[in-house]
Length: 100
Image (cartoon, rainbow, N blue to C red; front, side, top):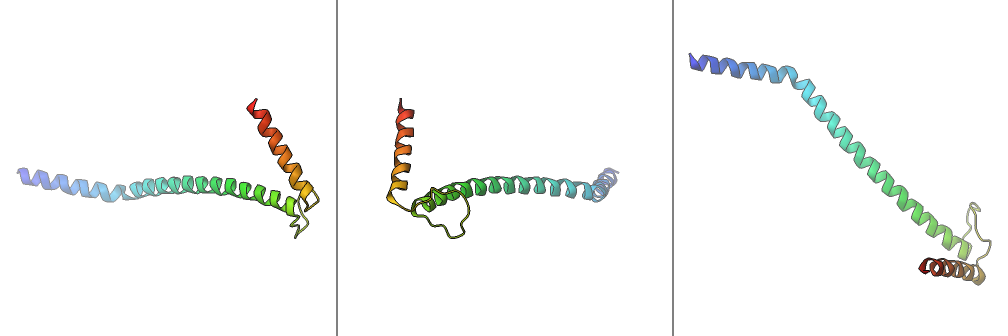
């Protein structure tokens, strides 16, 4: 008699697993989507910051050497020594005021 109860419980558990399978697979798929979305957001934020940094570096070098291929964006207007000197003086003044 005990084996019959055990086999009935096993069948009931198997039926329960089969019936609730769509629920479990949906929860697992949803969690996977949330993790993938968070990973994508972190990657997007990192790429945006990296793009801003390289854009700033490119703007700085473009303003110093006047690499103005598309004629867009602000620039100091010269590819000469005085523009470079102006940038160095401004950076030196900023560093000097922060040390005080």
